[in-house]
Every structure is written in C-alpha cells, then in structure tokens.
Length: 174
Image (cartoon, rainbow, N blue to C red):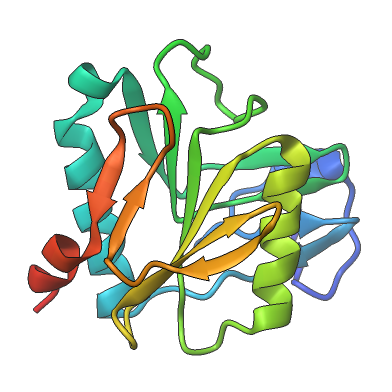
C-alpha cells in the first residue's frame, strides 16, 4: 500500500496502520505534517525528557516524546513531550489526558496552528499546555482562560511538585 500524502484524505484506520517518518498529526480525515528536525527543537525535546525522566519516581510521572494522543474521535496529535501520571494505564496511543503537553516551536509554526493544537489538548481535558520557543528562549502557558508568557521561565503544574526551569534547559542548549 502506498503511504498517503499529507494532502490525501484517509481514514482513522489507515492512519493508525501506517508509519510516518516523522509521525504526522491526523485531523478530520487529513494528515498534518509536524515541524521538526532542527537542532534546537530536538535538543530541547531531549533536555525536557531528561529533566522529567530524572524526576519520574519522585513526582509519580512518566515522560514520553512524540507519542500519538487521541484528542477526539477524529483527531490525533503528536506532542513533542508529554508528562503522564504514573497512575494512568500504559497505552500505545494515549487516550487519557496527560498532565502536561509540551510543544517546542519551530520557525514555521503559526499562531493559528498552535491555537488549534492547544484547543484540541484542552478539549481532551489536558489542563497544562506549554509552548517553548527556542528562538526567543521563552515560553507560554496556555490555559482555558488565556495564554501567558512565563517571564520567570518556570513552568509548574499547580497542586503538584512538577516543574521545569527553562533557564536551566536553555543554558544546556548550546
């Protein structure tokens, strides 16, 4: 079977039974490419995975990168980094809301595209969505009530010990 192109309409079944390199989002019968492949993007993903991985036991979490998350019946997103409660079942495709979905921005990412992704995560029940911009070396927390720049560079999950210090992440970027 030929691998569908991004412009092709495909079924959920076709999407789930096909491997893409890199993986694509699936939005209402269409594939959407994800921007990645640049050093800063990959390095930040790696550093975040190391950060959260070092705290998995203490914080009761599991960290995964580039994992399919079914946000609705007809939509699958592939966040750059997800932080899951260790109490959730292990799923080959995530169906339970992660504690955090993190998107590392690429120069090609648009506000419109990010708003749609964030809305999908919120619609699934994800309360903590973080956008990290390697170019400006800052981040944005996206909540149901609005988007806020993290001026102090610290992202937290309210009511938990979970946090990340962007200054430490960016210091290791070079």
